[in-house]
Image (cartoon, rainbow, N blue to C red):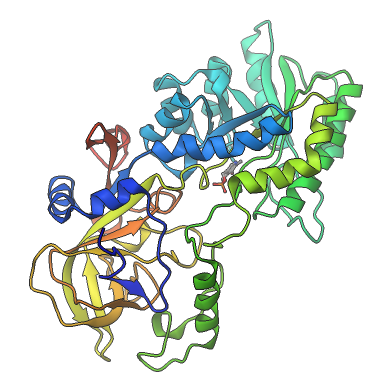
Length: 460
Ligand SMILES: *Cc1c(COP(=O)(O)O)cnc(C)c1O
């Protein structure tokens, strides 16, 4: 197979790890151009075959450690219905963050027992739908608990609804402060209030930490088991502990390239041709695109610390991975429409997409795009930046300077690899009345349109 990184690479390069399905798509230039012609640019391609493999990587160490593990795919990381289908087909649940996410999961046939509602804000209609369906609610705070109590009281049903309590672990040098959840003592006090738990039953304790540190998770698990013990002593019967998401993954195989990038970044000059990022502006908040400890190995490390405590209490371990479950499941294609430059001479490649269509909370997506040549007349070799459709000066698709050693032509296709986790959807906007990107999912030998596009508020 030809080297897919030949047509375009960053300066310095950060070559993507490409799944076989991505290589197959990228090897067919005509096919790529035809899909953009049919569905518009940009286009989000999905092939969820890696999802079950990613989940199995988490399950193996749990099995070895004698711990029951249940995985819930965090829906917010990718909006397709195909993502839920894939999680469900592989025997996993779904973690939902809004009314619509919950309604769509139920409509899709995901049983309520396989859904966990962790939404940061839970308006009454969401509480009602969870109660109607039987989906487990993760209670975040005392006001939410009061709203839920009021909803439950309105129904005068017999029986009880499953909930979990979101613990805000005590901040320390490893655990960052969080706006989510309540302290263990707040929950214990609440559970003692007469009537607080009327019509509810506590099934578990949940937390979700910022960052990826295994030691921080182990510490939060310890604090959760203390809360679980106290709740059990008070007569409740929590039986699971949910560690949320934040399970690490790597976009890059090569640790050396990652380190070299940072050396170049930190030492970059500002002169044109010497800079690593747009106008030499430093990146501050970035996802660790290469990490030493990912998925299976990370889970093994965590269980080495906590498996005994979980087994001793007969607790099921739950997790809600988003990004790391979607590793290898998506790729974004965009059409090259123009080659221009700034008035001070910086070469630009304009693509038919905008910067919200490959973006997360990270300052940049630190993975090299792949250039698919489609036979048009190429420019000479060039180095410059990828820009998009929003009428903003710094409308950069990627902030890194890129090399196109064989030039680039109008009509070429640029592929952004491994974008299924957050990059496609979490910040996408339809400003300028530009339509949202279409989403397609692998089916048989081709790709079919995902049902979410018909449900999108932007589409008639
Ligand atoms: C965002 C989120 C997740 C998923 O996090 P990842 O980093 O994508 O694994 C899981 N649970 C909750 C409560 C979240 O807010």
